[in-house]
Length: 279
Image 1 (tube, rainbow, N blue to C red):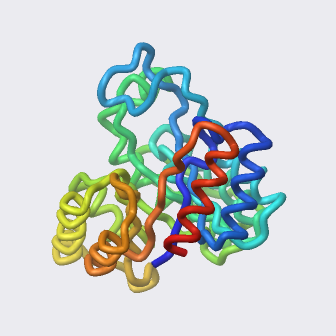
Image 2: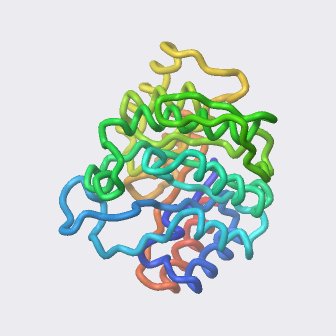
């Protein structure tokens, strides 16, 4: 089992000193990866399904990960997730290629379609189009990362006779991990991504999602170049040896643990606790 740490750019871990201390401690403790949260804006007042109070600080994911790349050397740097449909695909491809290069090929691009309509409204992006945009954007970004003569013609993205350099450090670009439990997200993971990410799921919900991935794999072709689908989960409940065994039996290969603590010292103590008990 690999262990990631979620929330390296948000909440009580959103100041430069705390991010630095926690990131270094996590790398030294053996965490495989650090994962960012993302919401460009939050509804005010908070209303379901908004996940956090409106004044919750959430740093821009690639900005935070670029900062972390400067004082770490081994830990994977992961967006958990980037709200793909809210972005410009060409700009995001440049942004992530730059981050991958500067970090020495340590980027994993977690993506999701999004679920807060108020956020899409503030950005001027049609909420109903988010799934179609996500599918197209993945293909367009990979074209920019891998083709000698990038060209793409779609409903939302069109380009030809251009170049976007430098290319990512990883050949073909960073691995893409799709978040979400909808049928569309599961299908997107199977057909377009190296991995799938389920956030804040208990064992029953995790098992249901894994079964959904198997059905999607039966119904949709997967390119051999994507390799075997890697499954990551952020558990809803605290870890135990028993729960870890249950996740492993499901086929989960990475647990991305949400940070717990309200001060730098508490966050560091949590990192040490997880490392001591499980890593």
